[in-house]
Image (cartoon, rainbow over all chains, first blue to last red; front, side, top):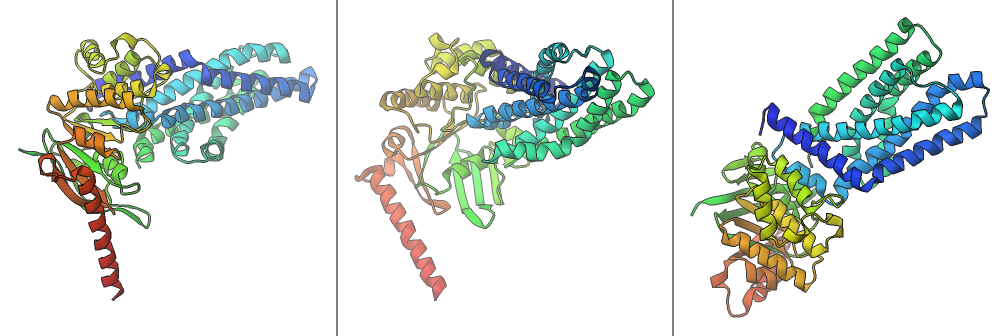
Length: 227
Length: 249
């Protein structure tokens, strides 16, 4: 079954299935959210920073929160498929397996952005920092896409192993270093009110990472899930 | 009759371990074959290769005229698979699970087909209930519904009775008989010889990585399937001992 229409039908079916199941259970989102909120609370009490210093560490705290919460979601998203044999069910379908990968990636991206939507206002209040800057929101969009693109691929590899919970962060964090560094730098730039010319290289890096890693994952997913 | 599954000299290795050795297997269209064998014989590995989930190391495999692994997508379209895991999403209802798989298989007139399948597996009145609230037997019946939703030519069942109580097994068998009556080809692995004897038209014994014997239902002697199964395994064991002794010489 090749062609654009069947590809899009399979992709939308996977996204619909993931969002629908999560809407029912709220298992993944609640775990990610509770974890994210705990992290920002702990940082708030642990650092006890002056308001001027807070602005400087905000970018780091935010991205540490997003990456760790995202990793929880990525692990769970694939574990659900594996535990009830549903991954085999997906792989048995006569569809381009890249559509399955993109569908899972899109659903994971939505979950990560939902966490960001809830975390940002709470963070703003706790740290007394305005995070609602259009450029910063664009950085979160780009950064989370790159992180989820590579994370979905690696979680589909890690889920085959008994030590999947430990394996995913070991595989994911080294590969995600460029996207996290670029996202932290760009976020910091926006918060410190730097000129766009100073932020642009980091945004370019994020964009390049997103395109390259999404394309690579798209191409190799079939081989990764093959037994 | 034409062969719908043809396997020749199939070998499957996992590292140094050889799971399937020079296995030959042929199934005619419309047959219901029970694949019997002890634990670790390679039954699940064999079904995973037939279903395109695993690649053969050597040998040729074709299903419905398409070879594996090169024409895997064409094979998948013609296959339905039921394993001891339900392959269903617990947080979706019965009809949502079928809707999802129906979209993945691009089933025509999906809504009508879902009604038909739910009726066939006796779950029409539970169609809106979440699968996680279903008993194991109901989940397995829905798993059969999922597997036949796209009207496959071949149905592969990997120990479908595992973990089911007597009543659930009976209901599952009734659903399987309906599938067989419609002329579909079925290959089922099982440890439950009496259930296999009730359902299948042919019995193959897989042991030590290859088919050790094959018998049609009408050719089973008076001591029944159990007797045939034991004799075949005994013979396989003796052959293996002789091979070892010859190799030692």
